Image (cartoon, rainbow, N blue to C red):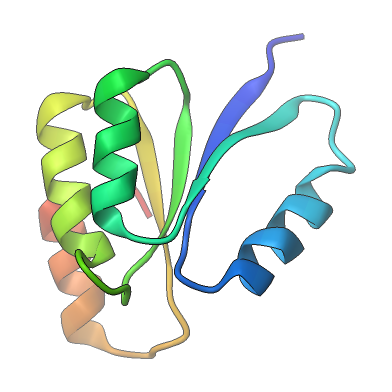
Length: 103
């Protein structure tokens, strides 16, 4: 069975660890990278785009998840990106979809 390789991008380390803990129950999921802002996500992806999915926060310092999603999807359309947010904001969700988010 193929392993799904995931990156988690969020500016809250507690949330990153919580997601990693929950995903650790699945043998077919491997978290291969974490980062705290969109710029770090782009830098890593440009060096190693050999993963399947990014869980991306919308609101982060230095570069937000919407901006990072747009850049990553333009260069690496095969990587799926799911947005994470605590906001019930239709505008941010719409912008994330326009940037190429898959969900």
